[in-house]
Length: 494
Image (cartoon, rainbow, N blue to C red; front, side, top):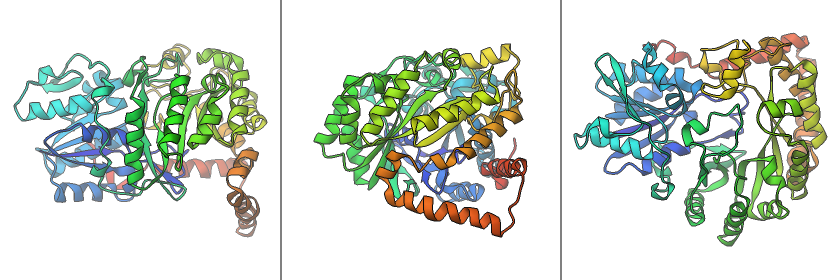
């Protein structure tokens, strides 16, 4: 059978698409584990302009018999429109929905019209179940034998029992050669994604990752990770993101992987990971080994500057560990993206401002300032529903950590959105101007500090951009609103 795997074009407004476009690694993993079929991967993030035309072209040229669509919750509306378009072009095409949204909300989804353009829903990890579904479509097994599958029967859906987490030893290496398009890049380098583990044991109340990967920490063997990096290098990759939920859950393993990367000669490319402050702070030797192995940027889970909020988020009092982790990383010339979560139930403007002051105090290189999002099936959502603090309960297209879907006891959704914008802009010049950033990118810093930013100010003066603070905020909100608006797909509603 001809199989087309599609990832969605939607992205969070935090991302600067001119600087980076990451490919979808999960699709490459599923493609590698499908045997006996012709498979292609369409990363629609690479074809954001003219999505409808792209889909029409794929249906005409490739003529897929089966189309798998993967979507996070904020991408689901786009996935539904694309599936509707596919059915309109060729009704017989089999459509399969997978990913986080399908896994989290399959039951609710199947009771509404939103499920209409989908024939099947795959919950959880898809490496085994997708291939098994293809076998069923060929008549080689029954649909009722496939764990994690939801399928139509009469006017409703049958939900098979959930699939246990995959045995990672049985998963084949991702096949990135199945991708239809290039364009995955970061700052001029080819960018790709690998994974070394799945699952996280942390109790964070705001996270829904455990619904996909479980609470058990599963790891690939280090030789397997090295082989995957080797494959990426053959494709010319210069930057690699590790998709692991928390890279610092097993420090001894992390250090062994660093040593293996150096031994294999793979420290000639740069790595980006996300990790907890506690994990990074716990080792005297880890940061040095990371630097030798080529780890260049760490998304650090700082989460908040308030002990009260850290306790509510189930992070514990990690402030001193965060300070220590930042010092260890910066001492080894590793850049830090500081992840903070704004809009906690008791937050005031002062609390939001304090988070930015904390990032400035730490000399954090980049800010990942996210607004608390009440993802389905998370403790945070249950808590905020109980407190009547969720202002948007149903429009999941805004559940991407950029938009305020909640209020606090003291701030409205609009005020949270505004204060995030205000203090991000006030502290914007701290980014790309830290000591560690200047060490890593002296020429980039010179261009930013002495050419780009002065010219931007001059342009605003010359061309009369004398807008008030509120007018500039509204202008930037409109631009963010337009980012994931695909006008050619708007007519495609079930």
